[in-house]
Length: 333
Image (cartoon, rainbow, N blue to C red; front, side, top):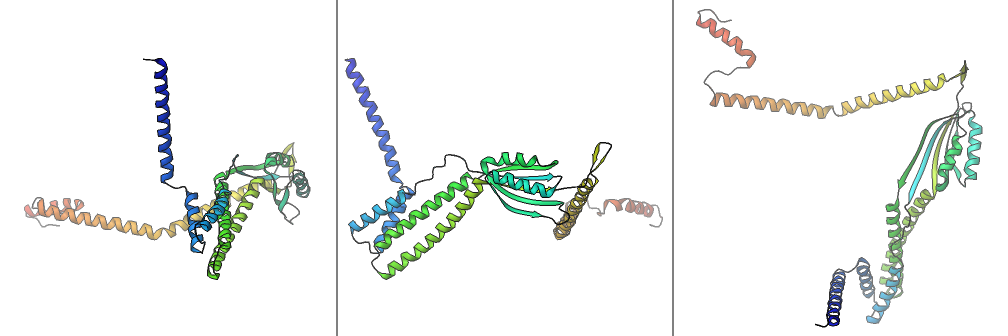
């Protein structure tokens, strides 16, 4: 056998196998139409129902709608979408000065003060909500912490909203493609009724687009700008023998613990009284089941057990004494 002919046979066999596999895969893809293909067919059918005309008109609608659907390709999200927020509870020496300095720090970071509240009781407390670029969140928190005498609490949390972002973006693109398709169909409406029907559908689609755009804008703002909730308070401290003594702080902590404990106790009492009918039903059910079981056992004992009188276990000793006394000629007690 010629080696060259053998190599050719193997190459031809490999090509035939490759074409066979490719043909099978194409057949599977053609068997189930893609969602966008089904959507295109639906729009073309709708256009024909609105007086699209003959084949040429349908082909024109299909081309226009196909362009609209092609523009609504799946979103390409290269990076994950993360919403990061933080909160700080700070003990400061001067609340008013700290509020002013925090405003300067936030402004320098490219953010803004969303909300600021300062108590009137001698300027002893304040609360702020600020927004800064997400990339400068850690830097801003570190700068604000330098203003504090004591950092009572620091929290930074992150929430992955990539799936929610992709879902909103896809729904918005599909709604925009649907709007473009209805606009193409509206151009070929043959009667006033058809025009009114398509206009009504366009109004619904535009309402959904505006709603989705609002949700998308809000989510994007949450991703781009991180929120920091800041609680500021000042206390009158006393220093004795070089030791900083803060009795008011400890008293507040103890009061908070007492209030928290009382709240837990009240919740437990309320839950008990609310669940009391359920507890009563359970107890009643158990008592009924026990009584039914006792009566059933007593019936089985009398039916199939020894032919003696059945008594409760705690009464059997008394009955035996009475029987013994009657046999001895005495009077039963």
